[in-house]
Image 1 (tube, rainbow, N blue to C red):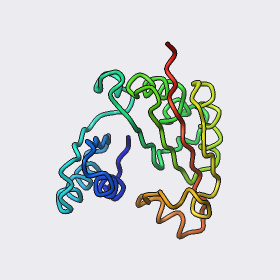
Image 2 (image 1 turned 135 degrees about the horizontal axis):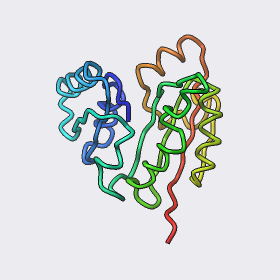
Image 3 (image 1 turned 180 degrees about the vertical axis):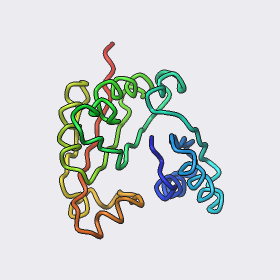
Image 4 (image 1 turned 30 degrees about the horizontal axis):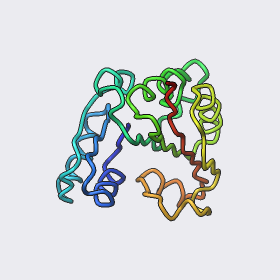
Length: 172
């Protein structure tokens, strides 16, 4: 969700060529850049959808997603805009509807206040949180990392990249 300009989704496509991937983005111009990048790189397993993340649970069927990536989402830093953060509890509740039992959410950001807020929200949502890391690029977790455009830019400027994995556990 929030696919950006396409570096991440095109790399993910190459790493998992037999998986079906959906890149979701609200901003049409950004989505077009991602589409062009994937087209140039022959990423045939990627589909694109322009929508606001707030309706994702009406667009995708329940229990249809194995993995969801939230990479460098807008931090919406003011307290009054916290509800717009893609890691706010209402969004996490929507994601849990579409993600299968045992499915994962991977979250990366350079913004420490957003990361700390998100940790609290993931906990409130009842997600199992694993591999919390405040410096991804200097950790063992880096070996599986696919870098985004923002990530490359921020890490080159000396920012630490914060990372976590969360598992959806459905109640029977």
